[in-house]
Image 1 (cartoon, rainbow, N blue to C red):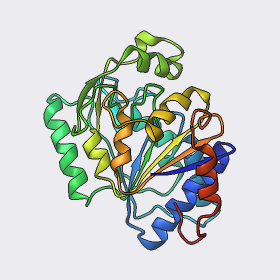
Image 2 (image 1 turned 180 degrees about the vertical axis):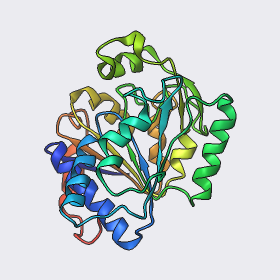
Image 3 (image 1 turned 135 degrees about the vertical axis):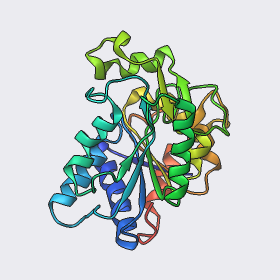
Length: 261
């Protein structure tokens, strides 16, 4: 696992966008994994800026979302399909239908989950998966206690996650759905490159467990320690609990420039 500490979200976004741009230069039809929440927004803005500058195209890209709420109306602004369209897909040249997500309004939710797993496999898997992390260590909606071998399925959201996400629902916790469909931890681990972004002091404890704690279902993101290519990018605040922060800075500063993330 590579840990990259940067001064702020903008610096992190530039590094992640560099990696995406390098991937698409080598493979224009790459498959991206898209995350929602606050963490990836600066990355999406930077990718949009490069698209508008004419140095990046996503015209041949396919993308898969990590998760989706269950039961939100199709036109609800916080339905994750709509969030991704608003924050990213609708601002670049991703083709119509290029972004797929689990169907949180399907009549048969287990069948929808199985179909989503099959769609990812049929696309050849995800080349680069963008991730955030919850304050309790969840990635996607794999809450504490999730099976480390889990696949796409329905999950019940914890009270903490619903409180954390209430900011997207005008502060109303009761408006946050209680259930979601989410890629499982094993599904996420099947991606070829995991890129996790975390900013702010509120993520410091989770980042500490992710990077320096034991692998445990109590902190689901720790499964990333077993991935052959996982990159964790954090700002100074999110890195504040890392015991080896000085070492991570030294290693990144001495990294060969050609290596990328």
